[in-house]
Length: 317
Image (cartoon, rainbow, N blue to C red; front, side, top):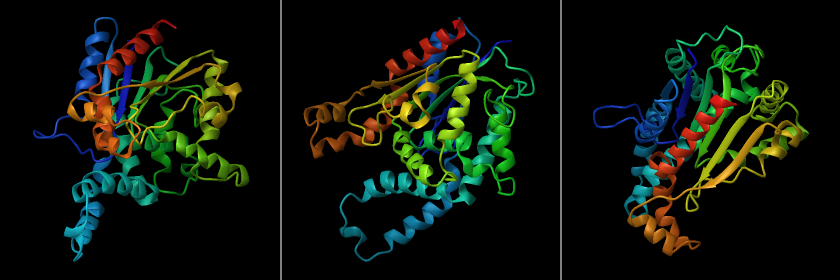
């Protein structure tokens, strides 16, 4: 049976669901499935990686609070609840030990969720859609495209290859796997990581460079005349979100993006902070709405509508 698989990847400061902590993508999943389920077979798969950094972040928080001047600092809650998880998760993921733990966890979840898809078969009619938020975009793109996982002796190599093997157009087997039909990046800093390609120009072995394998994927999809819809959602008050339309062609080469429809899309939230953020837009004080803006994508009906329509469109093309 043809299935549209939707993989959701969260950003920082998200942990596994519990009775008091619902699935982070619940509202977006419900809105998408409400519009697509009567037309298509859709399977939503929220992935989790955040808990691998719990222990070192808790230890660091305790050490920070132990300072004699801690109680005199401004924005203590913001430091602990927003800055520490973002910078901490990012810094820890750059460590191969913690990125290996995240890889193993995501691989197990992906295998379990895609168990009804035969990755050993030729290109199937089923489709894959990626919905990523914030730092989750960087992690997923690192796993799928970064060179640092190519060395056979490093921990995580085999798991990364197994994940890549599930996607058509990527090594280790270019001609097998599920077709990547759309990418939806929300509040994403991935454009900033294009700077790694400048390092790679002087050092072709740059291990974090994602451009060669991303180019490889686009080239193989172009040869089959298969299209990718890439929507990059940006709340104008979200300081973590960056534009992508002008960056992607430079990252992989314009000739490889002929079948990639990349579009930056402005989104907006709701509520009192959004109101004051709009009143103060462009000023430093508008950052009061920064955290709310950064998390607003998961409940945005316009995003759900666009993802749903793209899923439907990709089933026709």
